[in-house]
Amino acid sequence: MKIVTIGGGEISELETLDLDSFICNQTGKSSPKALFIPTASGDAEGYCKTFHHVYGERLGCKVDFLLATRSDFTQQDVLQKILYSDLVYVGGGNTQKMLAIWRDFGIDTALRLAGANGTILSGLSAGAICWYEAGLSDSDRFSADSGSSWSLTRLEALGFLPGAFCPHLDKEQRHAPLQELVRSSGVRAIACDNGAAIFWEGGVAQVLASLPDAYAYVYREHAGEVRIERFTSGQNLPL
Image 1 (cartoon, rainbow, N blue to C red):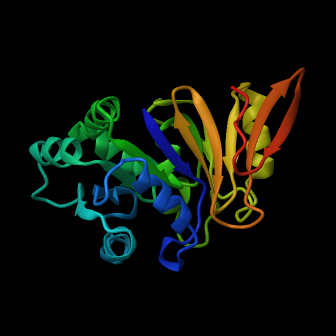
Image 2: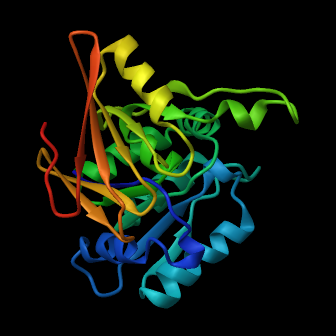
């Protein structure tokens, strides 16, 4: 499988444009069929328009959408749209709710089949967490009452990639809770700043970046301590 997991950045402000172009180029096609899955945002209309502007108008893709929260959505839509696509891009938002919907409709199964058949899998934030075994997620904040407290928590994901993933490391003060997750569970974690991404292919994980000073990190537990390594664009992660 080829999978690109983006730590964050505003697609509407073209902060991830170099990464988006890389994703398109991995298809090997001049006008790839790009499927946007915005389940985590509740299929937000504005998000869909932004994706169409970037991937359709700027990058020359033939864009389609899989809108799983609509009442007329069917399992047949899943197979037709996902298996027809050259690349799949999953948007950010509520990871927990997204994964629950996917499992109800068999979207997770279709994505695994598509990836095995050569479709490029990708996404940002929630759309990056989903491919790993687990992630450090802010899904609790979407269900918290206004003004009430919530915390970042471990969330089990699809397991296409090993370890746990943490997006937005530089922007949302996730370092301390990620350290605690790694210390308490022993899981290896990969984290990305906004504008940084990991490209997985054939068991190799390469760092990409679209913003200056955007890095990827590996967190490992050793003898009760958490060791952290930082990696720049073009480097491979130790796996």
